[in-house]
Structure formats: structure tokens, C-alpha cells
Length: 122
Length: 164
Image 1: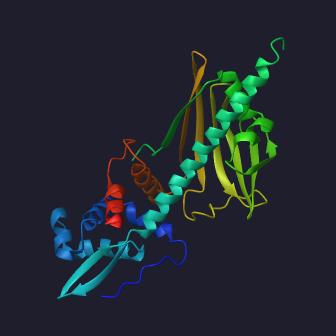
Image 2 (image 1 turned 90 degrees about the vertical axis):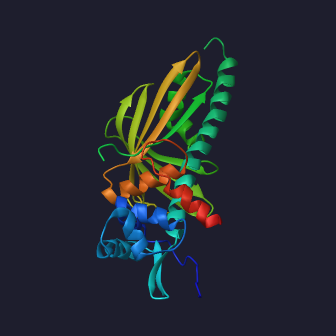
Image 3 (image 1 turned 180 degrees about the horizontal axis):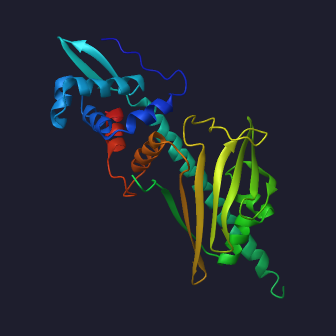
């Protein structure tokens, strides 16, 4: 089966957020992380009807988090993690921004302390 | 969920609290450390509740602008602000790197001095974000390692999957 995987532009994270706001959908994603699954397999742990699970799968699909295909008459869902990977990368960048700024603060504090040390009678 | 997810950085500086506070609140000093490896230009800095800190980070490819509105100013103890990315006219926009992310973050810096060492607790959390944005923030910060409260290992599993 052919699968083209690339990121054209920034994933639409608004849809990703909405998708992940629901605990059932988060659990579905967790399950798909260990491999593709059919609707019946996904419904079972939640004691939820297949139509109900399908509604959740549609939301996940619209968000670009899963893709679905038919294989031997089963509808299988496959996890695509790129949108969340992008978010994780950004969050780590943001944290790094502050950590690196604090490193610079550290350096500045040492410089200032040395300057103060040179003027004991200030 | 009544409590917003927070990201926390704890850091220590070998300096008196009064000096650390100066570095956070005097623009000439702030510009020297805020923004790693960029030129920081502070256009406005009003250290008072409701006051604004308008900041430009000049990089090779252009500038990034941000606006902080101070919430609480407790000299040498606590500084909190609502921090947002803006356009060059200081209008709030989503971060160009991450559209749909919470545009405004409540950022809190708390200072405590113990024996000549200043402890900083730096916290940030989404502000006025939608429930979906909050859930996303929570799931993201879990990936970054540990025990900050929402408790599911979604991202760890996902990233294992990506590397498989």
C-alpha cells in the first residue's frame, strides 16, 4: 500500500487540540500507538458502540491524526503522529528559549557581581 | 479540569535576590539576557500592574515582537505577566511558529533567596485558552518529562512509535 508522508505546511493544530480534548479519543490514540486497529477492536475497551467510536474516529481523521483504510473488509485506523510531533517540537523550543535565556542571565549576574566587587565603597 | 496545566522551570542563581530582580526589571539589563543569541530591543517598559513591556528580538531573517502586560509586581519576590506574540504594531497574533497555540501565556517568576543563592521558579500556562488548547498543552507538557500532573503517557508512546 502506498503511503506518502510529508508535511506540506504547518498542521492545523486547532483541529488537533479539539481532537485531543476528549479522553476517549486520547485513549484511542494510545491504543493505535501500538498498531493499527479495526473499529470493533477500538470499541471494545470502552464498551461503546461502533457508531459512537466511528464518530470519534472521524474527528481524529479530520485532525490528520489518523488515516483509515479498508483491508480485507475491515476498516482499519492508522496513527499519524506528525501533527503532535510538531507541537512537541515547538514546546521544547519554547522551553529551550527560556533555559538559554536563563543561561545568559547567569552570565550577566556573574559579570555584574564582578563589577560590584571592583567598587567596594559604592 | 479546574486546574490549568503549567510548565515549570526551577533554576538557581548564585546572586542576591535584589540583583536578580534588577536583571528582570531594568530594561538595560533585561535586554542583555532575554532572548538567546539575538539582539533584544526593548521599546517600552512600564513596571507596574497593567504596564507594558514591548519587546523586539532582531534576528537575521527579521524581527519577532512580543508584548507583556504586567499583572503582579511584588518587588524582589514575584513578577507575573501576560505574554503574547505580536505583529510589529504590537497587536496580538498567534506565534508564527505555532498557529492555534494559546496566543497568550500567563508567565510567573517567583524569587526566593537562601544563603546568597536565589531560587527562581518560572511558571507558564495558557491564558484564556479554549478547552481544546488546554488539553493540548497538558498532553504536550507530559511528553517533556514528568509528573507535572495530567498523567498520561501519550506522547512517550507516540514518539516510541515514530522511532520504530
